[in-house]
Image 1 (tube, rainbow, N blue to C red):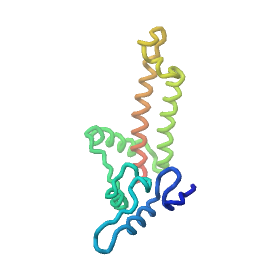
Image 2: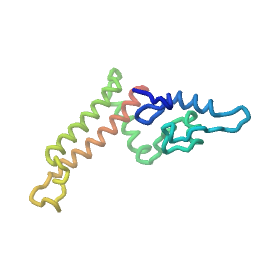
Image 3: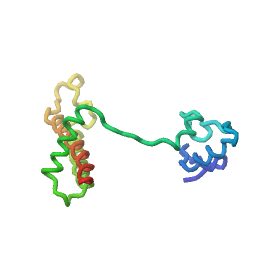
Image 4: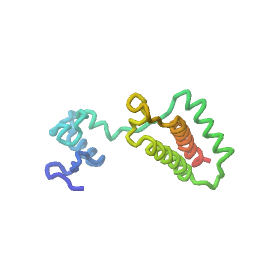
Length: 159
């Protein structure tokens, strides 16, 4: 990717690498504790971040967790049971994820066949043409299967 002549850390897409952010942050901090920011955040490619936020960006650590009751009491135990009772130990976690992806691709293809413009499902627009309800049932089941299999792959990897 080509770099801008004005800023070596700025790519043509308007993003910067984390190493260039760290070096810029170090360069603009003085020894007496006062921060000097000669360039605005937008000129470095951070259009939505303040200079203070840009300085803290290298310290960011992702801490994701799903604390929903549905996940805690239904989805995670279902995936754990499926891994313990239905999944052989030799099965690679990525193959579990690909199996879930195939369900979503099947669901997409069926919906695309019955409602290629997605407006066909609206009976207010076209009352003569109705998409069978089983198509939407398949979509809902495929989503449940996909998220269960996606949850199972992490549990399989730790098995």
